[in-house]
Every structure is written in structure tokens, then in C-alpha cells.
Image (tube, rainbow over all chains, first blue to last red; front, top):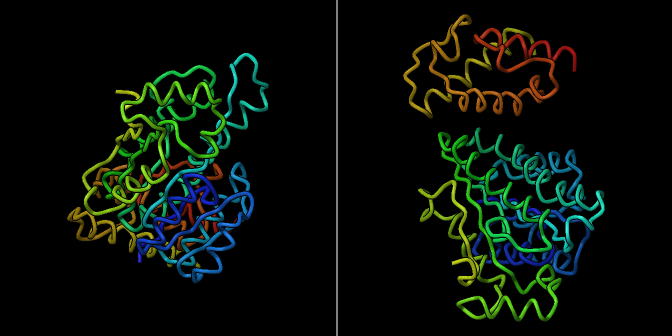
Length: 241
Length: 88
């Protein structure tokens, strides 16, 4: 059974990815700051062989390293890593306080870099692995009010391309998925007017759903995607086309 | 673990990578250069370090005790791990 680590799997897109992977026969290890109802129910429903969860503050880099170590020792393998954890912050750069800027960079960028470093060491030993970074269309196109968030997501895309070149020789694929604006808690930060405007500009006439993304995650984890690496796949209903 | 065992562990992992990557190495000597004699790329060196970290539970290169770019031979690697194990 394949073992996939998912960062931030307690709610939103991460929750959707965890649910979908469990439904399709994967074992899933995930962490989040707090235990949500979803985590409690999943712990009750699944055996510890299928589902592992820890409470971790996403910016605690040492805890992330230990999490990956525990997962590898428990399962003896890490087949995939989904770097999903992240937070959005709405505000003009010049009005943001420096603590919020640092927090965004720590959670959205430093955290996946360090978790990937540890997981990639195990993948190097295995001679195989799949890393998927959840990016965003705001890492590709400019959007007012999300400059720091955009910076972290663009950085993740650059990380994806270079890491794909670094690790390809050991059969490790690294890709990013860039969702558009979504109907999740993070997407709810949009005001009603902005939400309508985005839908109007989207050829497929709606915001993204979690289901739109989880299928791509599962595809990238599958054998059908074994020759795809270093790419950022945009799933936005055509907003950026 | 004494130096002899560490040295053998390093050689075993080099041979494992050799087999997986089909590098054509027939034998590993202490004074073999990882890059020039064994044909190791930086990715294979990284893989070797990952194997050793998992097996020996130390990473001499993450704490600046040793510098990976200064590791030329098989013996250099084995000695870096011996030193790290003795001081950890």
C-alpha cells in the first residue's frame, strides 16, 4: 500500500485530498495544528495502518522533520508528499505588519521546503517518490492584495522546477498544482463583489471546488503521470487563459 | 560501531547505488574518488548521505561538522561519519 504524507490535512483542500486518497486505497499521514471533527472521525473509522495524524504547528521546522521520520519508521516508506499547508492573507503590502509577512513566508514557504528536505532523503533511498506542491494562480498572475502570498507561491513554483531537475535522476517527480480561486474557507476571504467578479471572468463560470483539485493530485501520484515532472498544472476554470 | 564497520557500511551503500543506477563499479577502494573513480554525481552523493543518515542516525554535514564538498574519497566519507558518531 502506498504511503502519502499530506501537510495540513484537517480542513479545506487538504481534508479533501486526505479523504480522496483514503477512498482510493492509500495510507495517509497528515498533521495540522488542531484536531478537527474530520480528523477525529477519520481516526475512528480508519486503522492506524491507513491513517496517521499528529498535532504540529506548521512553522515548527524541527517538529516537521520528526513527523517525517516517524512516518518513515512506522510505514517503512514514503511514496508521496503533498505540500498543501498554507495560509492566505489579504491586504496591501504597505499596510501589512512585518510579523504577518514573516508568518506567511514561514508557513507557506519555509515549512514545505524543510518537510520536503526530510521526505526527499527517504525518497532518495527508495529510488522513487512523488512530490506535489500546492501552489496558486496568484503565483503566476498578479492580483492586488495578495503580494506576499503570491511571492510564496511563485517561490514554490521555482522550487518545483529546480527540485525536479535535482531529483529526477533517482526517479523522483516534483510537480505543482496551481488552483484558482476556490470555494473553501480560504476562498471565503473574498468579498461578495470580488467573488462575483472572478466568476464573471472565469470561462467555466464558477469558483473551483476541492473535487477539481483532488483528481489531479491522484493523477500525479499515479503511474499514468510517471513522465511528468517540473510542471505547474493550473486548475482554474480558465481564469488565467 | 567502529571505523571498520562504518567503512564497510559506506561501501555497501555505494554498491547498492551502483546496482540501482547501473554505474558499472566492480569494487570500491578506500582511496577511490567518489566523482572521478566511481562516477558519482551530486545526486548519488546525496543518496549515499541519505542512506547513511538513516542507518547511522547522524548527519555530519547538517551541523557543519564536516563539509560535503571537501569529501573526495570513500575514506573521507567514512571518517566524517566516524568523527560524527564519536562526538554525538
